[in-house]
Length: 303
Image 1 (cartoon, rainbow, N blue to C red):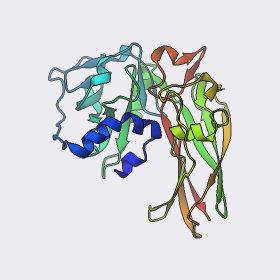
Image 2 (tube, rainbow, N blue to C red):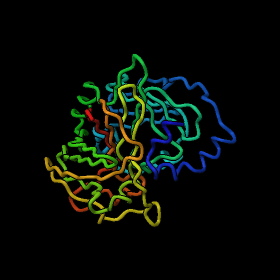
Image 3 (tube, one colour):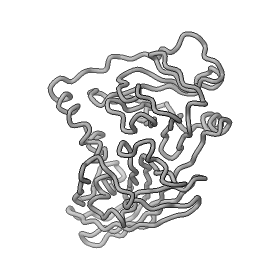
């Protein structure tokens, strides 16, 4: 449940129905095994699923390594209703890494790579591979082997980079700044908190968290969020364009309810982008692409 609480507010809205099912008819982990297409796929096949779907490199438009999102060239309706199963990324028929489709109504959480399903938060033209740490299992999503294969097929894009710059605590106030940099070769459109306002921006992110050195959460943002109307809409006026290599710095003011004691802390902040709100034919606004997903930054501070 703690993991679910950390999800962004707009995800929580979509999960409402599934949360009710979770309470009243919780389904257990069915014990999925990794079984794939029995016939060795040819070198053109990049992505396969346990229900025998196979996708070639040529069907993908690009991959954003900052968010681990894959974008298709065309719409794929099957991803709207995909429930459970497994997947694998291939290079010349050999597995690079595997994972599971994991629906929101499941009681348990997966370990390792997974694609969130039922609902899919990136519609029918993109999917994100998430990762939950498992002891002894490194995160394979941006492994050297994977990056090299993506480069070989001209699919690699770098998205954005995030840094937490300053965190200043004075009494019951907390002010922090962060910088978003376009690390891509394409102009990107990002959510701009100066344009959305703090309340709307915090509808898409939970803001800053502070953890002590024992990994206990000691602070979370208290900024009240404001949902868009309608809740699944977006406006071009919320976005700012970053040219390749360009950076933009933002400042956030927050309030501390429970005073902090002096010590070392780890700050964690998730910079959000849009997701299901953006249809495929809206992804590009002129020559600039709307950056989807979210990216996390952290910083150690001494208070």
